[in-house]
Image (tube, rainbow, N blue to C red; front, top):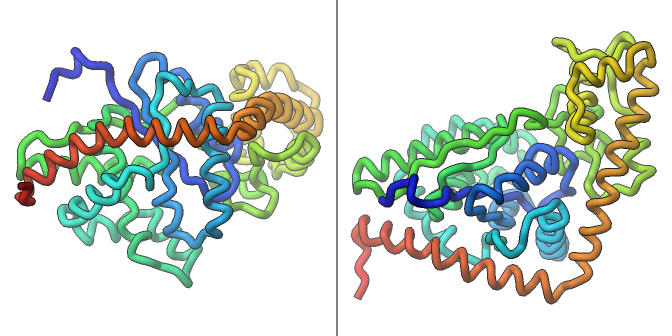
Amino acid sequence: MENTAERKKIVFSGVQPSGQITIGNYLGALRNWVPLQKEYNCIFCVVDLHSITVRQVPAELRRRTRELLAMYLACGLDDENNIFFVQSHVPAHAELAWVLNCYTMFGELSRMTQFKDKSAAHSDNVNAGLFTYPVLMAADILLYQTDLVPVGQDQKQHLEITRDIASRFNGIYGDVFRMPEPYIPQVGQKIASLTEPEKKMSKSDTSGGSVSMFDDRDTIIRKIKRAVTDSGSEVRYAEGKHGINNLMTIYSCFTGRNFAEIEKEFEGLGYGAFKEAVGLAVADAVGKIQEKYNAYLADKDFLDGLMKQGAERAALLANRTLSKVYKKVGFYRP
């Protein structure tokens, strides 16, 4: 492999086009990708293959695929210098996943936390794809000789198994895959539910605990005003104060103020005034993104062209790795 000092490092990341993109997805992922594009070669994927481990309504899945691409762009990602594509448009993802399945141990997959969680949540559909999900994710990453993967704390286990699979394969066949490293932002890496602040904010939440990037202004403010807080009324970040800590994290991310500044700003004002300020800050920021999003979404030809061009560029890189893998494992090519 070439010396990493002589090449611009590659960042790969993807989001599923299922459920509603939340401010948690924005603060924990999309927003943090923006500064990366200046320093790295970035590849951003709409991971639709992953999404069907849970039953989807086909028409909604197609619509959300375009919507997610438009949201990528609205959040500040550059369509000229990055690669954007839809996972199912590049067959190498599914092809490499099958090969890597044969180099992944059953015991490794059975220990994955997300499999246990999703199996409990979708007990009527515990399918094999849900079980081998981490292998497809490993294929996504390893196809592009990725150096850095932006991940939240809850995704670190998936990156660890990716590294284990790559190490096992390299140990047998030589240096085929580059070892990816996690990129974990220091602030806003995990935004919690407004109704259950000990749990992550989820795209599939219907209880009012998630703020969608598509919610209107009044809905955003109303949801945050109803957010669960803690006993007391002092706006202070403290151990065990999950509700107020979560709101302070959200406010910090949208305003750029640190916790000490927030505590001083709301000293003596209580939770009511603080929630109102958080709601306004979120609504203002999301509203600006929605304006850009609507403009991108209205231009179907542009989005379709971007998908097609992105898939072609991604396939060139992916097929290079896949060809090497096929040769290493002994697949015959005339």
